[in-house]
Length: 308
Image 1 (cartoon, one colour):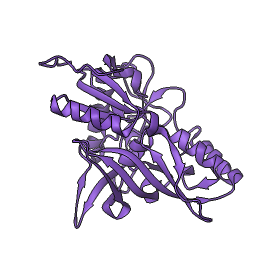
Image 2 (cartoon, helix red, strand yellow):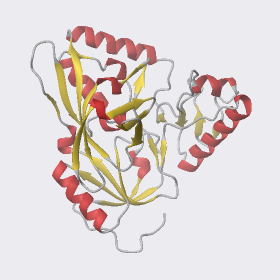
Image 3 (tube, one colour):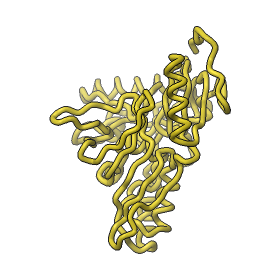
């Protein structure tokens, strides 16, 4: 990892020289110079101000389900949203309404469980998807033909300078595995803007019905996706009108490996870590898959996983 030219920041509770393999569902990754958990919006803004003034690189991660830090490491501060960023609350108690507000650090598993107990439906299709709410919104996560972006009403953001804003759904543009900020006919990515919270519109339903649908989605996943091994979920985005898994399998790449990194024999769009694979092995395998699919079909697969 490239060293900083000046001493790294002294910040309460900061962990130094952290192996990101411990914070990634792929169980692989280089070292980060620092990792800080923030508990509130005020703390986040103070931290961003300090890091910006001292020109320290930084980035926010969720539950580590969609990132891979290269073995070269990250010479900056990794920020995780905790504390108040994990809260869920109702915003509208009127009959027939299900408006809730969720902090970006909340896990999808916690959110879906909470919605089931509160008899609020709409997120069952997300059952079994790892990660945080903020990451799911940023990537417009989805499954079974549904996406979380369709439920978003208001998005809460903090820009790289610590400025807070809220955007209604009319100011957002959701597309396949992407969220952009709408600006007339133009749309721009989020860049360094941090998602801190979101308001979703759900619908009331019987708790038993919601749990039944969650169980159905779980059954549909079982046997079709690898379990009990480290992975980042679907590794590649699906090309238009096709499936990355189908292309990878048809190219004869299902089950190939680089060291302990393997294209899952259960689902070809999963790269799994069968033991001690490092980021380099996973990235080498990613490139092999991309080259193989390109050679066979002239299709360039784009990773869903963010390489840092």
